[in-house]
Amino acid sequence: MLVTILANAISCMNYEPSGENDFNYYNDNGVFIVNEGNFMYGNSSLTYYSPDNKRSESEIFIRSNGIKLGDVAQSMTIRNGLGYIVVNNSGIIFVIDINTFKVVRTITGFISPRYIHFVSDTKAYITDLYSSKITIVNPQTSKITGSIPIGAHKSTEQMVQYDKYIFTNCWAYDNKILVIDTETDKIIDSITVGIQPNSLVIDRNNKLWVLTDGGYKNNPYGHEIPALYRINTYDFSIEQKFNFALDDSPSNLCIDENGDNLYFINKSVWKFNITATNLPDVPIIPYNGTIYYGLGISPRTSEIYVADAIDYVQNGKIYRYTPQAVCIDTISTGICPTALCFK
Image (cartoon, rainbow, N blue to C red):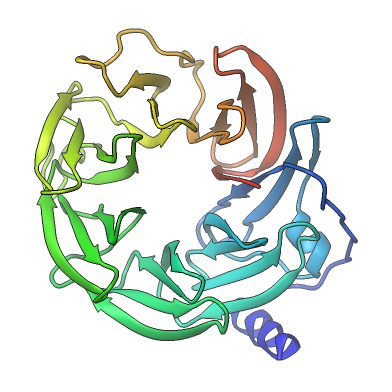
């Protein structure tokens, strides 16, 4: 069955065969780096990094499986020893063994998938950039089991969960956070925030934090001051709002292991304690004239990983910092490193 699925994927996605490698990382607490590549070039890739010995492996997907990853790899999530790699423009999710990097199965049937969130071992939601629904799948069978219509909203992006509720942001020409009841698989409410909410996290107090980028000049949906919102997950009310400057473009909201500190990119990398009353004045990692494109915080060590796209054309880099922002390593990646997934 897997051979048939992979053959169909190769046929539809114009993959080319390559050599294979046997990897064995069973006793390693590594980091997967999802390299987006360039739109319509099919040059996404996956890099693996071992923090303990500062060793990295490039192009692990094609080296392990003999096929390319596809066009615009978007995100990766780990569940029960398996890595789910969402490849946006190829409309596919590859499920890999996180120790050998080999494909176990695939999930298809999407237009432009973005993120996967597991409700349980047998139910997961997949958001989509160009679909008017969130797709429900059974990860164990790779079958689509249903969908959640999102009405007039154009797309859905990231997902976080508190209790039975999943919150997802409508980023493209929108200003809503949708609230989904996982018991009924229905949208029960929506929260109005600023223009283009691009990322969200939940802190140790079960508060939802949402970052908006405010759109851009001549944006048909509008252009306004970006903001950081704190939202009550019980009654869905906005408790606090922190305003940026009009020309700012904050993104990539992350949170540390204990749920105490938020991190985000706004040219530089910034750190914000959840008890703070104002946005920070001094970045934790200053802007260095390049393009900070992705951000991740290690759930084991709270180390900071900053992805650098450089110029969107050449291979990028990841800068690894201590929680005190001391750089301890630089990792070579593929083109446009965008997401980090910690094993």
